[in-house]
Length: 160
Image 1 (cartoon, rainbow, N blue to C red):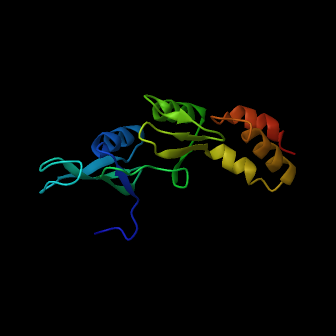
Image 2: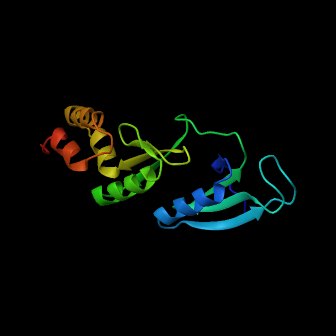
């Protein structure tokens, strides 16, 4: 069955490489199908990888090889991390080999796709019903590049 709405990503000839990398990072991820072009297309020939269907953490994605497309900050994917170790592991993997850090838990991977590596604890703290705790957590997060959960918790202060 075809999913009603599916994230569709365009890569400049590296769709399969990117998809294989992404599925290596998260559980419940896999390459579902690789479709090779039946015709010559701009930027690739017959038999080259055209479409890669993959599942990332249970969500179906499609990647297309097409020249001339680039990603912008206007679209990003958030990965909810359970702890600092997962945050650190994903941050390191996604910024490696040409990726770059941004701010407040955002980064750009080597293909130019933007990600938010977000600890669940950060989201809990900025939604805290105690508005002072939430404000302190948010202010701390805004000074960070990669999120440091312990520092956000210290800034938020102890539970009443």
